Length: 190
Image (cartoon, rainbow, N blue to C red):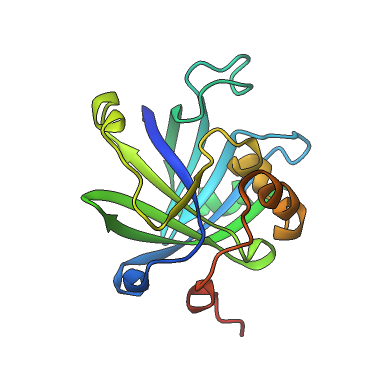
């Protein structure tokens, strides 16, 4: 399925207090090939749902370079678990996060609390059906800086990095010190 995704992405300085009441899933991404600086082909497992997606800005050059990251072409193909397991065995850049489905000011949000090496980073995405809805949007109070166009938080760039790798840029450009309250969403290690 091919669609145009319209979204804004914000840093989250402090997680909303009632976020724990919202449904959540674990999202695991593998961006391939790992040799690319910014791979745009993603193998994803969202809970039990598996898919492969190629995603890039609508107005990009060469299928992924440059362009307005708030409007992206997204080609997604659902995968059977066996297909996912095979393709996901390829070397790639990986990232894991808890995705929390939250409603803020009448808008549906996806709050991503990153796990493992990216612990300390939290982002929130707001998706829109059309440009008019997007134009009417005012960010809720818990949202920090708008990083919709920030290349360092693009999935393929972010994958395979640690919070320490990006912390300096986020601190300098956005005064971002990391999210407060993420410990309640950290994955329990066995």
